[in-house]
Structures are given as structure tokens and as C-alpha cells.
Image 1 (cartoon, rainbow, N blue to C red):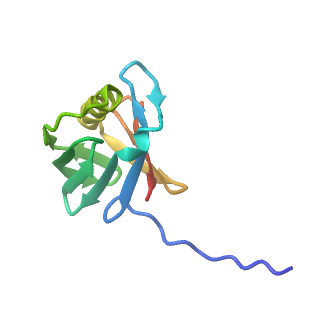
Image 2 (image 1 turned 90 degrees about the vertical axis):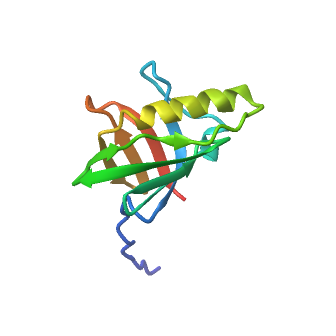
Image 3 (image 1 turned 120 degrees about the vertical axis):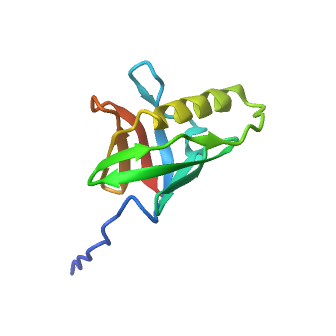
Amino acid sequence: MLLIFKNLPVLTLEQTTWQMIGINNGKGGVLSSAQTGKASLQFIDGKLQGNSCCNSLTASYQLNGTAITIGPVISTRKFCTDNDLMVQEQQLLQELTKVTRYEIRANQLRVVDANGALMLNLKQR
């Protein structure tokens, strides 16, 4: 048996689409549900774009090493018939405003607040 190792390209925050796998619930826990994967984010040249489940979102962002500042988040205001999705969407929008740093490991993006608490956990899509 012959093993062949191949170097994978290094993931960067920008130019990569990230699918949500966990959202801080504001009570000290990061939750996942069957609905969580419906949310996604993409960082492109200082502009954050995404889908927060029922609505689209956009914001500006600035990077300084692994520090990140996300500007005001603007979201469409479509009504979502699923209350759980609406709650998840509100949690996502709130947590984005608290983000101060990010790290990428093993195809996952983790964004944390100033205290190091995990706000959002995403995987490469």
C-alpha cells in the first residue's frame, strides 16, 4: 500500500464561503440545530455578505492580523414563518456585532468576542 500526501491550500477568511455550524445563544452556549446550516457568510474585500436564514445581510469589516471589526450589519426584513429560524437569525445578527477576533483551523472559522467567548462557528462550504 502506498500513501500519497497532498498539501491542501491554506484557507483564508476572504474569498471563502462559510456555512454556519454554531451560534452563541447569548446565555453562554453555542447551539446547533437542523436550521443552523441555512446561514452562511462570505468575506470579500472589506464587505461581509451572507444569508442569516430568512434574510440577506451585509456589513463592512476591517482586518488587522486576526483582529476583525464588523461595521453596522444591514439586513433585509422578510418575515419568516418559522419562529425558531427568526430566533436564530436574531442571535446571529447580535453576535456579529460582538466579534473582535477570528481563527481558522481544520476548515473551520471560529469568531470570538473580546473575552475569547465563541460567538460563531462556521465551516468551509
